[in-house]
Amino acid sequence: MAQAALNIVRSSFYADAAQVADILQPEEAVFCFSEASLRQRLGEFTAGFPGDVSFAVKSNPSREVVRALAEAGLNQWDVASVQEMALVHAVQPGAHFHYHNPVKSRREIANAYHKHGCRRFAVDSREEVAKVAEMTGGDRRVELAVRFVLPRDQSNAAHDFSTKFGAAPQTAMALLKDIAQRGFRPVLTFHPGSQSRDPGVYVRHIEAAAQIVEGSGVRVGTLNVGGGFPASYPLSRPAPLATFFTAIAEATTRHFGKGNEPRLECEPGRGLVANSMSLLTRIKLVCSDGDDIFLNDGIYGGLMEFMQVPELQPPYRVIRDGAVLTGRTKPWKVFGPTCDPLDVLPARLDLPEDIRDEDYIEFGTLGAYGIATSTLFNGYGDHAVIPVAEVFNG
Ligand SMILES: *Cc1c(COP(=O)(O)O)cnc(C)c1O
Image (cartoon, rainbow, N blue to C red):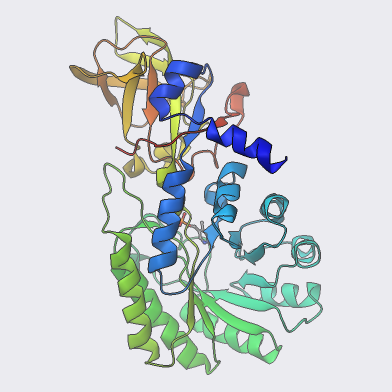
């Protein structure tokens, strides 16, 4: 699309979701996206994190978000698949990728390497090291990032990531040696779990990283501290990002030694995008003799994560005639639009007693794992993304 045309589309944005509801009156659920709030948060990361910042595409693979980040200057992307590389490359031809999914098929490795110029692959097993070596022809520019994991009780995330991926410290040492012997560039990485509220979890991983490097005797130039940075939800209010950045910088110096610190990287998903999108849903039915309401979106759509991790309940508010509806509330049982009885929110929502069908409910803080995990079950879920100046975050 010509740049001029893009600017026209973008300058016609709405003030907020209430205005979208009032003017567009969307029948289908839509995501409202504030590019300004995404840029502001990216600025916090790039100005405050003591190293390089990339974006975990899986948390929000919409073209709007990828384009906004690319235009703001981001050019390193943590990707889970070759499909995500294609998506980013269509927006930013010069993009650099970290293929940090520790399990990849041979063909995926080859496509990443040949078609997308990917030179960074995560591994957590000997078998995967051998596969990457085979499919990249022993190219010495390739970086292999060993993903390690600590015992489970050392994480305190809303979403524990330690049960699927990651090598125990002893295995990580062996993998680093293997990688160095093969002539690849060794990198060390971890993911402390999504929505990690305790800066100490990064500190403990950095301490372990230093021990792994020491125990392996391999020089590691780069330490990637993963994602996991928390966003603010009504039931999960974390410390500011700066607290995490300071803890990470101090722990790196303390455990690796001054002058001997590896280059740091982070790859936030949630912590970067969560506050830049809200989901604008519409009430289809209010059962007046009970306390049931039916929405045009639910757990198979933008609200799946709320189902998986009730602690990540999004903030919400009701909109009627372009304004927020207030007044006495009561707890309502909220169903989604599909014909599956499972399609009900895991907690009742306190909503005004006099809500009615065609009112809107805006759910905030859904920029991460909202549009990303939405399905097309029952024909719903093909969300439009509407640019707004500001989104509601509770
Ligand atoms: C999911 C993921 C991320 C992003 O995690 P958040 O908790 O959303 O920040 C970063 N890196 C890797 C390897 C991941 O799998």
